[in-house]
Structure formats: C-alpha cells, structure tokens
Length: 140
Image 1 (cartoon, rainbow, N blue to C red):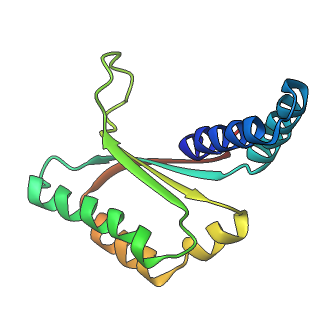
Image 2: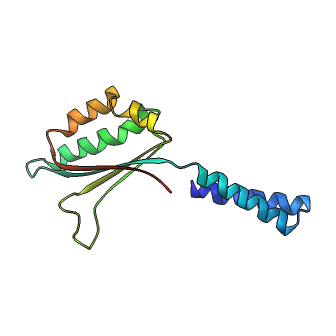
Image 3: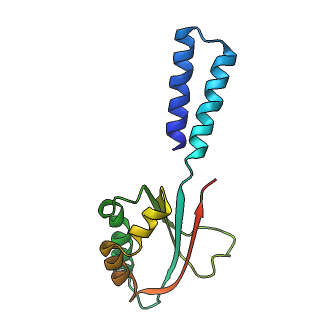
C-alpha cells in the first residue's frame, strides 16, 4: 500500500507541476490523499505457530504450502505474508512461524474462518501444530 501511496504522490506532484498549481494547492491535495490512505484501515489476522518435534521438514513444508495457497482460494484475503522467526531476542516462546492475513472488513474475516478451504488447511495443520497464538487488529 505504501508503494501505491508513493507512486500516487509522484503522479500528483507531476500533475501539479504541469497544471501550474501553487505549492499550497499541491500540499492541500497531498494532505487529502494522505487522509484517504489512512482512512482505509485493514484488518490483520496474525497466526503464530510452532510445530511438534516429530513433524518432519516435509510435514512443515506441506503446512506452509497449504496456508500460502489460501490467498488464491479465498477472495476475501486482500494481503498475505509469512516468515519464520529470526529474532535475536529469544522471546518467541517456541513459536517459529508467523502468517499475516489481511482483510478489508470483519465480514470478510467471517467468510474466511469457516470457509471450506480454510477448514481443509486446518486439517493439514492440526496433526503437526504444537502451539498457536492468533491475534487480530485493525492496522493504524
């Protein structure tokens, strides 16, 4: 979203230069654009996982792949990213994987949670999951 905002700012500035807008007019448009971007808060669904010791790397890869595939199966997912812990602080409490799923609304999340593809993913995950923490928040 920030890349879009940066690109949009460049377009706005170029248009202002071409149209002869004053710097105050350009500044007003920039402020208006910033307000529009910040008004579009997104709902973040954070899933932190750890896996059972007996789960193989292949098992964990299957879980990762199944979670990643959800973004192409459930249209309510507006953003997706994931990674494994690399914090030097040692405060992860054994959790090794982080998945961040983004929705535009709580209604979208309500579609996602019982969605058959999400439930199928849970079936892939369940035999290998040691622990999970889930937190949802509105990005500010």
